[in-house]
Image (cartoon, rainbow, N blue to C red):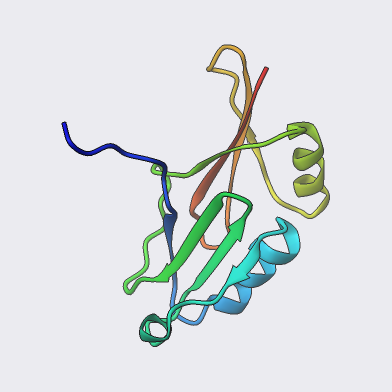
Length: 122
């Protein structure tokens, strides 16, 4: 083959119309992501682009909106227990999942119902 994959550039999650401020509050204030300015030609579509280190999320407006309940991004973290405590303290419901050996993991939903998985390999 003459091509190769390098990395996932970003993950697209869907959000309902006019939800950008709620997305910013959740991803920036609660999770610590930074907003990335969208290219001028894409701003008219709405949504928000966010990043945390090498993790990039594009939140796109979708009408009609339907959250991803099964499909999901999975973020590997350091100190999963600290993140779990932070989320719980901020009223986020988490669901533990111990079905993968050598991993601590849980998932939760963003404000729009999209599933997000958090994993730490042990």
